[in-house]
View 1 (cartoon, rainbow, N blue to C red):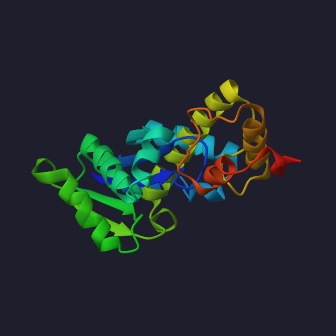
View 2: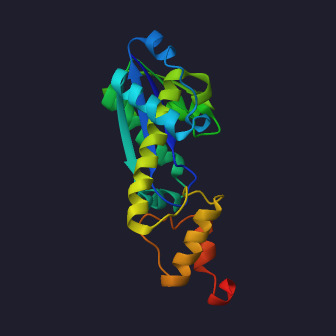
Length: 211
């Protein structure tokens, strides 16, 4: 069984990091779905493909909250967190081969670290590439699952804390939300990644900075 693994939400300042794996025996069926990298899909296309993938593939998800992400970033170990999460979803599906989208600048090292984390309990070949979600349909499938799961998490978060945009520091709506939140309460909801530079800049600001 062939498996693909990817993550969504590595860079945002708000919300979870999601790692997803998709696995299938019939690769030809996968190729016929017209899969592509989730970033190239609009929300309607992504939702339709997400449902197709869930119907035809085995899949596994790891949803990692902002506080856990912070605890690894604090020690400069975000890649370690990805290795643990990638290993977890692979072990749940027990494929013969897994193609993973490398978070490490050295894809071979990323593959070896996943194998080390898996230990002797899982006998799997790991194939690691940069931009694997654009090269392999099975990784595109994982990318879509991860992105859709994160978007669903973000919708739940917005119901609780208000419209915070995409959660990415490059999003003006996200920055406006953070600015208003800091002016209003000088504190952060649990969904905010406080180890991000964006938040640290707010934490060292004064009220005069908002005039």
